[in-house]
Image (cartoon, rainbow, N blue to C red):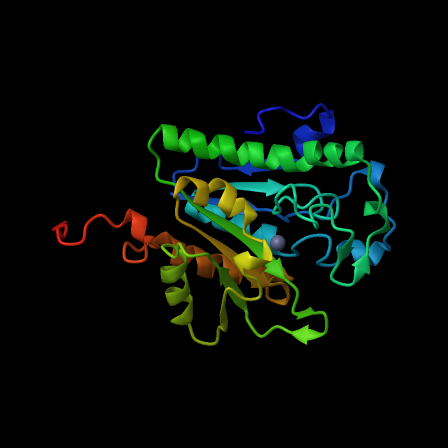
Length: 272
Ligand SMILES: [Zn+2]
């Protein structure tokens, strides 16, 4: 899938991999890591201050994911182009793949794109990002390395005028093998409000990267959303990265919540 490499030279720089040979079972992705706009896009018609807001990226998510990757010796794949150009965590048929509006802000530079312009954006960022994850996952599976996918995002504290009370949200679908023990571990911590499928859920079509690379292969996965005021500075980024690293260090997928089709041992209980 998506083997074709984009023709643009710049596209080779639009995805970055940290720890490509990471020993951890976890592979991290940061789908909205950057607010960078290549010069050819100008400001997409937006004011400079809009480009630093959450509509352009997930502020704080990359430093957290990078620190986790270093501490866990986990592979991390990150985008290096703003989601305003193209949203790598959306299927190609999503209406907000190239968002015409984000929250309440219209994006003039995304209006009325030609098929060619759209294809160029896909080739610039979407294909390299997903092609890289695809290759990494396939190589790991080929050598028998256990693989669990976790995407790291951040969300804005106030959305369309509504306060969001959760410090962190864990997003999952009906495969809860990884999400369940992660949620339990977070809920044991004092002073942290944990959202379960909040502030988003897979029904909002925000689960694409994990659906494409983990769910399609039956690999355990979960999506992490950290409220961005918690990770706006280095102190908060360190706090959350270290807290999550501690949890992930001994986080094992639960057998009990495997989808029914995978549960073949009912009467024959394993002794091990
Ligand atoms: Zn995000």
